[in-house]
Length: 111
Length: 117
Image (cartoon, rainbow over all chains, first blue to last red; front, side, top):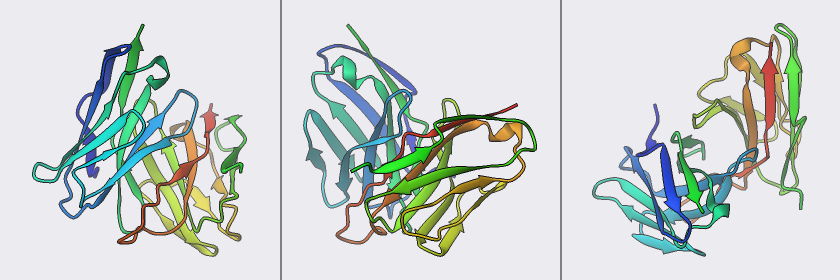
């Protein structure tokens, strides 16, 4: 079964506000997580990743937080823009790099 | 670089027909993958390959076959198309297996949208 899952299927955000997308995982041995963004009609696109020896990692306008105690990670998008409207997936690779995807959170940015 | 290229982008098949979905990558990646994505769902792994000549089943392999004769190409074949195979198919590749110091996310193509009627 799935080893990762997203908490909310949809998120509506006002343009300029911050977005927070949550994800839970079940495998305590997981030590590397990836966030993907999928725009309509496109394949998933790598956003940011994090290893289990880190609690936080920042990219351009995105931050991923990892809480290993409760097996939870989140993706924060600062100053959400219309171009951020997409489906966001967290993914957990296993030893052969097979990815388990959650169902995704659809983010809609309101003007 | 083109990255991962999938052809065709769209296809309509009749039940019982066969077809091959093409996937090629120009990043010299060892690992390649086929996923299917049904509406409102995450991606499910069909088959994967860790190198030329080596393939293995994923979560949902029934009704599909793959081959990996070269590093670049990883075609997916549907032998007897069924309505349940209507989906969007994504091919992906990555450089190497996950290692202790390896951060190697998969790179995806833009998908093949397949309808079987």
